[in-house]
Every structure is written in C-alpha cells, then in structure tokens.
Amino acid sequence: MDAAGLLMRMDITPGQTSDYHGFDLVMDDNLPAPLVLLADKGYDADSIRNDMRNRYIQPVIPMRKSRKKRVGSDRPLYRLRNMVERCSNKLKNARQVATRYGKSAKSVLGIIDLASIHLWLHYFST
Image (cartoon, rainbow, N blue to C red):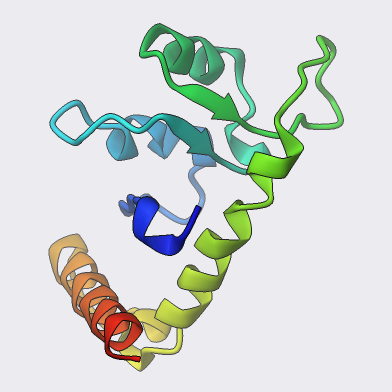
C-alpha cells in the first residue's frame, strides 16, 4: 500500500486526556469509513475494539502489557503505522505546528491543514 491509500484523521484534545477519550472525535460519522484502524497501545480498549467491529472496521491495535484477555493483531499491517508517525514528524517540522502558536483549536487545526497541504504538494511534485 502506498501513501495515497492512507487517510489520516486528527483532532485536538487537552494534553492530560488519554488517547481513547479522543477516539470519538476522530471517528466522527460524517467522515468516510476506513477499512482498518491502525492505532497505538493508547487505543487498546474493549469498547474501541467492539465499536470498530460493529462498524466492520478491522482494529489493528497492539495489546497493552496490563491486558488480561489476550488479543492478537496483524503485525505486517501494523508496520504501515510508521508512515503515520513519519507524517506526524514531518508536520512538526513546520514551526507553528511544533510550537502550537495558535490560541484556539480552529487555528491550530488550520495550521495543521496548511502544513499537510504543503507536504502533499511536495510529495506529488517530486
């Protein structure tokens, strides 16, 4: 799978909020449904896994060490998550994204959108 087949969704939560509390914001119903959810251990919760299965989305989430009920995940598919991490790191190269100069969530998300467009144009121009 190449980068053109991936869709990355972002939203902003308070810094002290756990990852799975922001899950509903990212998986809003008005967006196209993904086929696979590639997420880190912060999203390892039975409620998230059940919600994904009810939506016919394959959850690819590694288990936390503290999980009592063992759940497997597709390791070759999970390796694609490094593209998401690399994209996040490239977005942080934009000074305003890294330092979060925006005073509101809308302005920060707008800055992320502009940086994403810049990356997208650079990707297709090379």
